[in-house]
Structure formats: structure tokens, C-alpha cells
Length: 295
Image 1 (cartoon, rainbow, N blue to C red):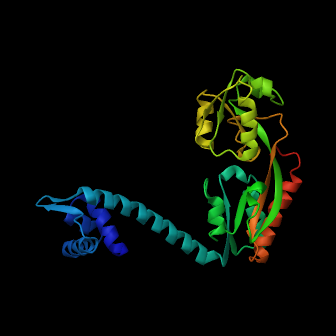
Image 2 (image 1 turned 60 degrees about the horizontal axis):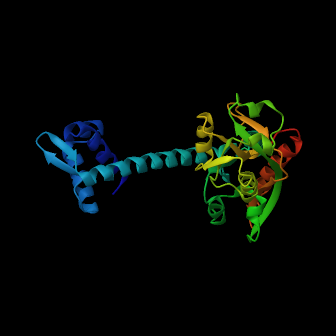
Image 3 (image 1 turned 135 degrees about the vertical axis):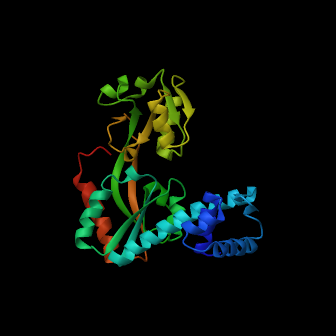
């Protein structure tokens, strides 16, 4: 099965007409029909039911074409990225993080880096789950994570980045958003969202609050779901500051507790590229200089 056959199949599924599909693909109808038949012989089932009026998808064909459409879009993006890379860049550095806002200064770091290393591309990779496994399988060059997650992982270098504190997330018009800090007793009688892959330090705070018996709670699947729940008046939530996108749409108020998160960058010990070391250093400098920035 080649890309032309995939394109013919997708177009025929869209038009349900051999003549129209052939015209749109700039080939003769016999050519298109022959290529569709070769594809069906290769995969071992009928994608289309033929009739005098045209062609309609079989149930198996409908599922198959849906998969082909998604695959073709992914292939298109891969080709475009490859073309961009070959035209401008000689090397790339991939950096993995769970969400876009985890590294607030990433865009600024990329701009600074590009001035000195214009032929090396910085590629962000977002993996809410299994980011460490992805990194350890050498699919990314840099990993943003918590220092506690790096213990007993061989073959990596750990670079300290910043200390992130715990904040209460609420709607901007919530009374809890009006102060400079939120304390445990301020949450009595409120509903707290928990779960969603919370790191151990945050789970400890959540457990301590719930154990008071004066705070209701329910589980929220992930950070994005939690933000929707907050906007829907379902409750409030505690979260590490590095998840704050600083958009101003949701209030982030410091929570009074000793727990915090040591945020680090990990690199592979055997990756000694000058460009990689320079990019890590740029990020470290940006966070070091942002001493008054809420994190």
C-alpha cells in the first residue's frame, strides 16, 4: 500500500464516485479503479461496495478509511516538519514536559538560543503521562520533571532549575482569591478537588486537609479537567505553581504550607553537545534572574 493508493481511497470515500474521484486526483478512472482493487487485495477485505451509482464504504471500510485519514494527516505533518528541518536546521534538541505552561520561560529561552545557534532547532514535546519513560528510551533529549522523580535513575545528569510552591486555584471572584495567602482554615466548608496524578508532596497536603473532616472533596482526572471544574463552580484545587499559565483567567493564590517542588531538567549523561549544554544554561539563567516571579 503506497501513499497514492491511500489518497485515492480517501478521495473515493469522500466522493463515493469513481469518475469524480479520478477527476479530482488527476488520473483516469481505470487507473483509480485498478489501484483501489490492488489495495483491497493487499489488505484482504473490501473497502467499497460497488454499484451502478458509485461506491459506498463497507463497515470495515469505514473504520479503515478513518484510520487512513488520520495517518495521512500525521504523515503530512511529518513531511512538512522534515522539509522545514532540512531547509534550515542541521541538528535538533527535543525537550519534554507534561504541559505547555510547565516552562514559562521556554519561548524566551528559544529566542535567546536561536541567536547563537541558528541551525539547531528546539522542539517541545508534551507528554502528560510516561514522560520519563519516553526520555529514558532516548526519544527526547531534555526532560522537565520533579527532582524526586530522578532518584535511582542511571545514566542521566540532573540540572536544578527552580523551586515551585503550592497555590490554591479558584475563580477570580472567589473570596479566597482576594487575599495574599490562603490557610487551611480558609478551606473549611469548601470542596477540594484531588487526584489527577498529584505528586507526593501535594498528596500529603491534600490528605492533611481532608483528614480534618471539615473539607469536602472529589476526584478530578487531570489538570485541564480541574480548570473546567473550577470555572463551573464545582470546587477549588491545590496545584504546583509551575502549572500556572499566568493568563489571569483563574486566580492562583499562595497556600500556606511548607511543601514545595524542586523542578529540574534531565539530560542524558552521554549527550555532550555544546548546544544542549548551552540551552540548559540559558533556561537556568532565566529562572535564576526571575527571583520575584511566582512559581
